[in-house]
Structures are given as C-alpha cells and as structure tokens.
Amino acid sequence: MLRPWKIEIQLDAQSEKAIYLQIADVIIQDIQTGRLKAGDALPGSRQLAADLGVNRNTVVDALNVLINEGWIEAMPRKGAFVADVLPTTTPHSHSGKQAISQPETKGLIHLYFDDGFPDSKIAPMTELARAYRKIFNQKARWQLMGYNSELGDESFRKVVAQMLNHQRGMQITANNICITRGSQMATYLAAHCLLQAGDKVIVENPGYRPAWKALENAGAQLIPIAVDEEGIVIEDVITCLQSHPHIKAMYITPHHQYPTTVTLSLQRRQALIRLSNEYGFTIVEDDYDNEFHFGYRPVLPLASFPELRNYAYIGTMSKVVAPALRIGYLVSNDPAFMQRVAGLRKIIDVQGDAMMEQAVLELISDGTIKKHIRKATLFYKNKRDKTLQLLKKYLKGKANYEVPEGGLAFWIEPVANINWQTVAAELLAKGIKINTPDNYSDNPHLNGFRFGYGALSEIQLEEGISALAAYLPGKE
Image 1 (cartoon, rainbow, N blue to C red):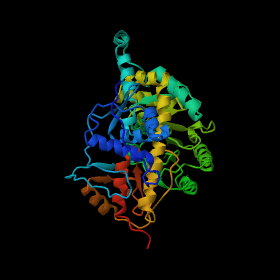
Image 2: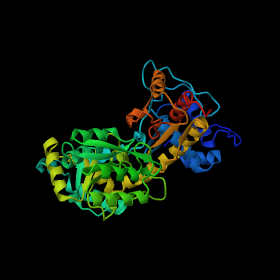
Image 3: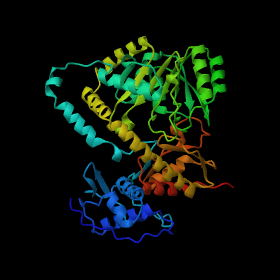
Image 4: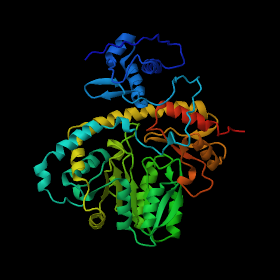
C-alpha cells in the first residue's frame, strides 16, 4: 500500500511536552493544513519510529492519542488512516502551558463527566459484526430453531459459567445463570424474585440509584449504610441487623464501590459472609466492572466464597464488548430462586437475543474477547494515569482523591464545601455536564462526585478538569 506522506518534525527532548504528544500534534497540524487528507494512509508504527529515531512504543502512544481524539482510524490488518470525519475543534496543542479554548456550545452539551462509560472507539465492533453476520447467515439453523430457554442460550451460559469459575473463583454451572439484557435487568429480576412489599434491604451510601429504584419497585424499604475507605462500614451493618431483625437482603458493589471506587477489604468481606449466614439475608453483589482492574489481580467476588449460603451475583459484558451491547447475567446458588427468575423473565421477555449471544460466544471462543480485554485494560490504565496527571496539575490543594486500582472513574472530594447546583448550572452553560452528589445519596453533606474518564479524550479531560478547577477554592 502506497504511503507517500513523510512526517517532518524536530523533536525537542527538553520540552515540557512529552515526545509522543509532539508527534501527535505535528500529525494533527498536517491534517488541519491539508497535507494529510481524509483516507490517507499513515506509515506503520515501526516505520515512523525508524524515521524519527524513537522507541516504537512512543509512536504507538502518539497514534493512540490520534485514534482516541478522532483524527485517525485504525483498520485491522490494513493500518492507520486519516478519518473521513474529523473532530470539530479549533486548532490546538497538547501543551499544558497553552490555554484551553472553550468552544461555543449554544446550549449544547459537548462534554459530559459521566460515571464511568467505556470508550466505544476501541470496542471490537468489526469482529462482532462479522460474527453476527456469520451466525445470522446460518439460515437453516435459525429457521428451524424455536424459542430458546428463557435463561439464555445454553452454550453461551456454559461459557459464561466457565469464565466465572476460572477467572473469578466461582463454582457454578449453566443452570446457575440467567442471561439478561444488561445488568439493570438482572437487578430488576433479582429484586422481584427475592423481595416482597415491606422487606428491608441494606444499601451502600453513597450508592447506585438505578439499583435502588429497582429494589424499591419490588416494594423494598432501603436502609442506607455509610461507606469509608475500606467499603461498607461493618459496625453500622451490625447495628442495623440488631435493630431490624428481618433484613431480607443487602445490595453491594464490593469490587469497585459505586460511586467512590473503594475496594471492600478482605476482613470486611469475611465479616459480611458471617453476618449473611447468621442473619439469613441474601447478598446481592453487583460486579459491574470486574474486568478492568490495574493491580496484580482483581479481588475475588463474595460469591466465590464457598461458605456464603445466599447470594445473587450480577455482571455485564456491555463494558467489555460495547456499551450498546445489552448482555448481562444473574447468577445464584439457589435453584428455587433461579426458577422464579426464569418464570419472571419469560413473562417480561420470552428470551434474550440468541443470535447476539451466539455472536459473542464466537468472539470468546476465538480469543477476540480475551485479546480485547488485555488491550482495553492497558488503554484505560494509561488514560487513568493521564487523568491523574491532570488532576494533580489543576486540583492540587483544591480536592482529594484516591487513585483507583480499576474501573473507569475517580471519586473526587473538594476540600471546601461546594454549592453543587450553582457549579453544575454554570458548567452546563459552558456545555459541560457533571453528576452532582445528589445522584448518589440523599445525604446533604456529601461533597464528592464521580468523574468518569474512560470515554473522554485527553483534550476533553484537560478542558473539563481545568474548567472545574475554576469553581473549586483551595484550603484557607
């Protein structure tokens, strides 16, 4: 393939701007000036590295910046090409010294600090579409096939069970699993098959409101329990159990607590298991982003402990494959509970998307999912580290935060009390939307918010963090 363009750049090792950003900015300039046009092919990373006399990883980092910001597109086995539709931003530089331009929004939101969305640009959509077409084209099979099991395609459930057993230490079979249209459906099914009107459920505070709504819809009375740096506070749980003798369940996000991102300590995990067995309540464990963990290994879920008698475990593949892919799963060691789940699932949705389940199964079987998770984990770890640099630069002395060991978000707590409604309104007028503390709790003293970085480009991250910093006073 002919690649006539040759990069012209004098790299400055003494510059405050990283080498990979110098490379990225020169390529952006060549695109903006028309030297590189839509559809033009870029040299391969090895060739660029040789031409520039730099490490290939430096070039790969530069190309990742360009891909994430929408300047170029990577096509498997073909290379990198200038995107047909370019970002609608004004010329910019990645230099930290240069002021960040604020585009005119005219009432439109151009930047959203979500609660941890994945970046759809790195999703294996080409591979998924190919697998789906392959399954769809097997006409004879689908024409002969009637309704599938309300629990989901059995071969797919077997593979999910194998994954959970091997990677998360669980001991289950396909009969312990119901495939759902996302984790919210799994939460709804768990709530309505577990609870009756008036049942009391312990939830984390702050916590995940969509799950709270599903529990309340089933008639539950929620009892919020505080969260600290080790997760839900066990002393408060014990006090609650002693004062409310008929707690039916606990909804918890122990791996990366939503929204604070803290990991429930092993000591507290063991304490919750003992309390669950002693008081007879079911632990509903939402493991919403287990795959994206940056430490040595993810902490195993509570559902993997063989001594835990009553659990409902919820997971999702939406963040792993693509945000629009609505595939979640509900797991339990209680056969009677799973029968109720199957019955309710059949009422509200006779079966799931069997063809999509088979397509995802194809990607699991050929190793695409495993490869994508490795790639995505490194991608998000790098993005987390870049976000951390920006937080240190703009929020030093203005906010506290811990570096998350996984997931796609930071929990940020300003050092001063903030009028969040005013700040949110003023940022919204600039086209920047944030989730205020009332999204996570009714506690009026909660002063933190969840900052999702996964779906934002480096330019967007710097624009948003610098804009937020203007409204956060430092320590007096």
